[in-house]
Image (cartoon, rainbow, N blue to C red; front, side, top):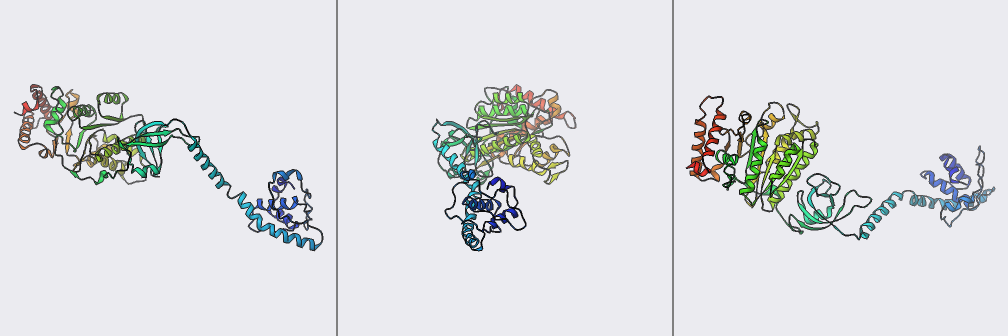
Amino acid sequence: MRRSTLQRKDRGELNQIAAALGAKPSSRARKDEIIQLIIDLTADGARISQPAGESPPAEAAPDRSDEADQGPRSTDSAPAAGRDGDQKGEGSAANNREESRAPDRGEDEVDPGNRRRRRRNRDRDRDRDDSWDGDPVAVAGRLDLRDEGYGFLRVDGCLPNRNDAYVPVKTIRQYGLRRGDHLTGTSRPANRAEKNPALLTLESINDGPAVFSDRPQFESLTPIHAVRRLTLEQPEDPDAIAARLIDLVAPIGIGQRVLVSGPRRSGASELLTSLITAIETNEPDIFVMGLFLDQRPEDITEVRRCVRNGDVAATSFDQTPEEHVQTAEMTVERVKRLVESGRNVAVVLDSLTSLAQAYNAALSNAGRAYSGNVESGAVHMPKKLFGAGRNVSESGSLTMIASIVSDGSSSLPGVLSDEFVGTANTEIRLDRWAAQLGLFPAIDVSASVSRDEDRFIDADEVQALQDLRRSFADSSGDGDPGAVVKALETALSKLRGAPSNADLLR
């Protein structure tokens, strides 16, 4: 009997056919098992007796043309079903024995099929990996971890790429790898079932040997006040007025958090670029990392050109909020790994407002929000990133210099400015009116302040700096609406008249 004919019948008809052959299928037997039982019985010469009240099946005799497709059968075959009761009884007993075997055969053929296919796929992938005998490809990049435990080696910046190498969980646990680690090694190409290459060997971790090291966690390092000054004045370039003015009105210590606040179009980006040049010139032991988010593409090019020894991570305004967030988080995790190894790092971020806007757009609206439809996470995450700036007692430091937009009230910039009050050690205020008049840097010399300058500057110099700042303020006059501009003009004229800050303080 053909399998296709039996497939068109319902379960009740199949049970009647099996009963006519002397077998009684189990109530839990599947349709395929009943069909296979009928085929096995009819293939051995059993004849179907007509069920009561029904006409006989169209194909009472087995079709031998299908025997080759049925595969191997059991050696215990049922006797032919005769017309007398004794023969039916013998056939029923034999078929009961066959029934006990039929579910086992159906389970082997149907249930484990998916498991066998999965095993074959795993074995095929394993054989393909083991049999790959090509030349390994050198690979280097920053490790980006996933919540599941595995990771990818970002070979081109901080964003995902098809050339990123897959790093298995075993390797990450074996070497104690963390997000932001810089790894070098070799990889193999991706096979047909993969999208990315896979890491084969690990050669170095953060420019050191590829061995497990019990390094401290960044969060467990002990934060302390700055004990050394970050000198910005460049003796060979007395025209670098911006760096000299900051040294006078708001000196910066290594490991501090510096907030450059001001309205839009007040020259914050240009000021941060000049700070990068000053740090690289005067502090060769400090690794400078520029982080510029939501910028114009041509501005990103200018920043990359001015950074000589450090690194720049930047995103343009046409990229998605998720890409801004990914770039910022990967950059901060990278500098944390450097601080853990004892390095001094300076991060120059432009801007916290752009980062908060990216978080606000990326987060869902299900969370608790501030007024003006601002997500709470959009404020918390930039604060967490900015709070990574610190000097640690063990070794190393992270100087965080970030800009923030200060205008606005109920919108995101206003909420963000209120949340960052008191978080910085040094605040540099910018004035839009001074910037519109073409003064650079457009610093409000009276509002800019360094709260801990007495910790890294001796008392005599602190006194001289305070006297100089008073002279700037006195020249502007009390109650003058243009006092900020007049004080700035006085400061700039004195700086241009003295070859160095030391000469100005005498």
